[in-house]
Image 1 (tube, rainbow, N blue to C red):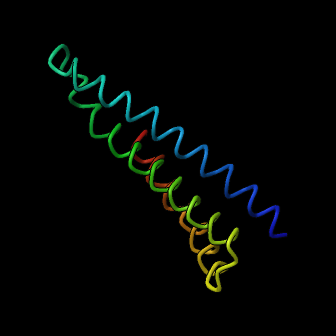
Image 2 (cartoon, rainbow, N blue to C red; image 1 turned 135 degrees about the horizontal axis):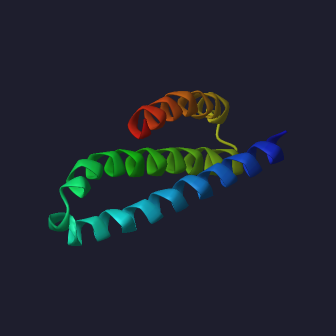
Length: 98
């Protein structure tokens, strides 16, 4: 069970941090061409929110992965908290992109 949770945590952490990194590069590119189109100015807050959410989720799961790896006493409550945090993150992302 612990190994399966570690694999899931590492996978979600890699996915979240990769998406956050890719969107951070897009944010930098938006900064260079922001004055070319007014539509880009409207899209920038959405991009910043989604970048922050993906990065936060990735960092949270990375933290829980290391807690499971080192066998900390409070790893199971942290695992539950991180899994429960996926629902609000998903809801915010769907509202941001809708």
